[in-house]
Length: 74
Image 1 (cartoon, helix red, strand yellow):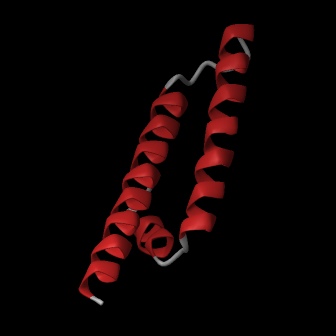
Image 2 (image 1 turned 45 degrees about the vertical axis):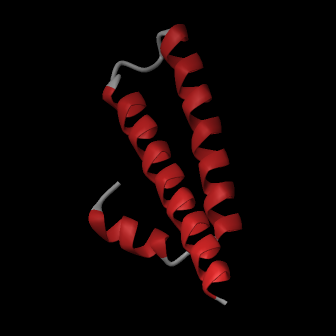
């Protein structure tokens, strides 16, 4: 994911991020199936998908922590 993409994704809500992670995971499983079938030669695609999922999960966790901290301050 590029930095510009991350800036746009940071503005999304938690449910939107969760649905995005779900779709990326589905895409990853389909890519693994295509790799096993021999239809994909570019294995860096899988690496990039895993990295994107990790970045999204990190953003979700950051938002959860921020929400908990803002609740405690009230």
